[in-house]
Image (cartoon, rainbow over all chains, first blue to last red; front, side, top):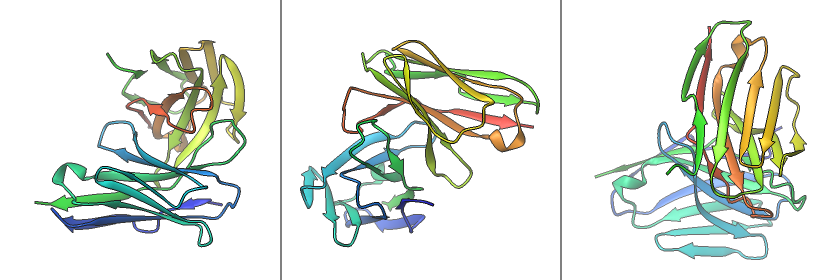
Length: 113
Length: 113
């Protein structure tokens, strides 16, 4: 039973355009959501997060949107750059304070020059 | 100076063997984790330790035993390795109630033949 799902395994966009990565979750108890970025042969690195009390969080070229009623979040990257090519993982945590994160299976983004 | 370091990076071993993966963090974090990335690319939590105390133990076979000699180290020992144990294992750490901002190691790719 996968509680966090990223239904698009891959996405290809042109440099300078917007990249939109999507994530759906099923557990309404999740209250914190994160995006991680992973390059080959490296561990995931934290990118941006959002609390369930917000619907948008922006950090430079990266914006995360949260739609709680739809149990959906998305990551927008604009403008996309070739260096953004990586695997992006969506993750969620609940209020148990154990620090446990539930991850999606990732979306591979390719930004073409 | 690597924040979360795992050794070895690659491990190829025969079925039935016993092996260990080591993890060390120099971030002063209280909480450490082991995650497994399976063939379907999902990152799934296995264990979590907070200040040397086990706080999360997901449904993992008894052949897997974590050990935390101090809060900077969390090792993973695997007995009687099976083909299905082949995966990438990631260690991570986070500050207390860090809202999931893990720092990951670069991963250990375990191949059981």
